[in-house]
Image (cartoon, rainbow over all chains, first blue to last red; front, side, top):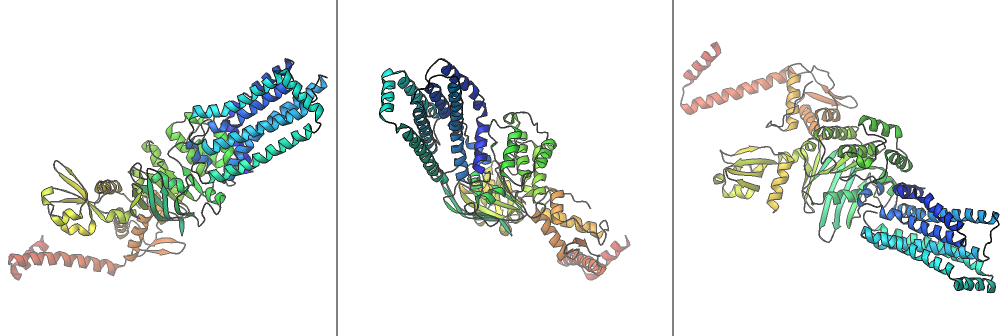
Length: 219
Length: 283
Length: 123
């Protein structure tokens, strides 16, 4: 419960940024409207989730410690709160994508056969990126310059988004994926395993971050 | 009945060491933690509030350490920092919400009463509050729940005398029932000196003096006079003599009063004067 | 009850409180049986530390001016006249002793000293 309360605090801290969320949603919708593959808005939503999930790290001040650290809690509550906050954006992205997919279906548009496993891989990939960023923030982010922090936050998300777009645009790559689908029906199971693995890595990373920060000042 | 126990507390930094801080603060009393800037006051208080981890030693509040029960330990502390510690974009309602979430004993009614009493606007962004309003908002957040130890880190710095006086009364009201205690740090004592029961004086991370304030003041005399009158033995007994063109001023242990010459003037010192001369002595 | 703390005074604060209370008890401004404010109450009202007021009260207690009773606080005792007399007598003796000593160092005779004493009495 305390972890969830810390998650709420993170939301309040970055609320000005959260207000932009609908804007990003509109952009995703526009992309989808352009007739791209449904995976384009999906990967865009994942990109947005990655950027939002690390926002509280940028909003941390040493001075806040007097309030936040003193709230009756342990390091575990505080770190878990931050991890839950990150995961909540993945959740939001998944819900948005789910709504897209349902609309997509009811409108009778074509869905590529490999869209579902690909989305699962995308989800696992997004979670992994967030986990790695969280590890970086907790392990070495403490004294990072704000400019560098900004780059560390945005670069992996941008990189993965453009890589995704490139893959999508590249007909050959598409063909490869399609071929893979034809050859292997186990792709869906593999997607599920990837997501499960990402979740496990997420939990392990959270535990590592708790252990590491427990000995630190001002966290 | 000790409320706060600090044992062999040490903190090691690259450029600074705080060593062997030892004291106890009984229920219902006020301690002034004094020393010049950079002497380790904030470091000590940050270890008491668990913002910093100590390198060595132990701190107990009401008999428990933070490691034993972090929740109970932190619930018992009310902390007012030298910096305004609410996140920048918080509003008063956010603070109330968070306090409600975390402290079972928090009373929104009491909190609102304090807001009204000190004219703290509900709507205004808190980062636009004046220094005085910010301090009072911190007080409101702390006094509207059930705490046992108030920790104030330079809380009255930069406040006008009216607010300072109000805070003095608040602190005395706080310890009134004899169950709760206050520890405050400051480098300027003046008005705070009067209400302190105990004084802990540190300099460069080391303990200089620790005693009941009245005892401390009585153990020293502030001596003023002409240098030519100072004999060898008196010279040795003087603490931190400061010379000027017309004479000198120094501290003298009261039991050495017999060494004073007839032309010398002496009076009871205040804590600030004791601090100044001790620091002069250590240089 | 009236207490004024002066920072300029040579007396420590606890002694200032003690002396002022004593004076008011002796001249009847604080009558016998009055319950004094609690140590903490007084500390808050006067704006001094609890240890300071504790010391003032405990001094008054040892000197027999007040008694602290469990649950009732500190109560002003009846001023014992013999105690008062004894104290006054002591003060008189002190003054006269000083006078006699001064006279002796000056080599005054007993008669001369008595003469001075008589003259002063008649004045």
